[in-house]
Length: 217
Image 1 (cartoon, rainbow, N blue to C red):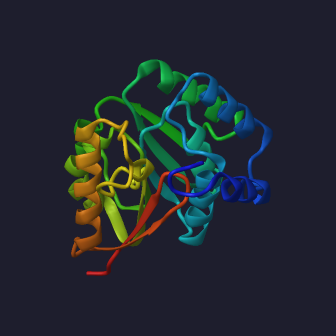
Image 2 (image 1 turned 180 degrees about the vertical axis):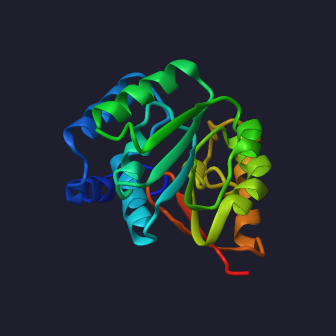
Image 3 (image 1 turned 60 degrees about the vertical axis):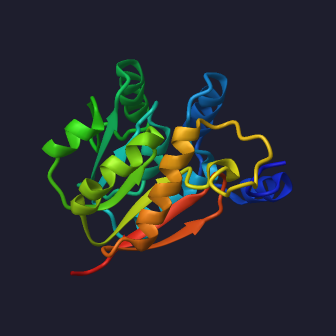
């Protein structure tokens, strides 16, 4: 049984999701086989709904992997829209480019290879939606720059904020996650929920998705 949502409920939610196309289903299987840190289809559907709801034309993603979440996001963009997505691993970045092309989204997706902490200094905002799903120890160092890049009314969406329940002291009898990552996420959760520029709520979907809207000045 899942630590956050019971398996029968997750299976029911999965049965309701009809947004995943054959390519996304294929990439999800590939990610599982290769043990890649991909979101699941229910989180993907949430990303597409949120991007559509805010009328996103410019999206930033931190953590591309093979392009699975990026396809969910870019699929919500209008013809002139752009997704900028950052990935440290060169092989994964190339796989992502190939998958964006297969999805017919190559003209909407720009894959940037390198350290997000350095690359973000070269990126110009504002963005309508930012999706953060990278190394957990980067969550806190990246936060202020991401907030600065977000337009008022835009969304910062962060994955894995419940960390299989390990952010709750004593909830998991035998924690399996790296302690440093757990501390980083716990601190990040406190920061986004008290940040003066953000209004935040967390959806207990899969591993927990935080949704933060940037307040107007």
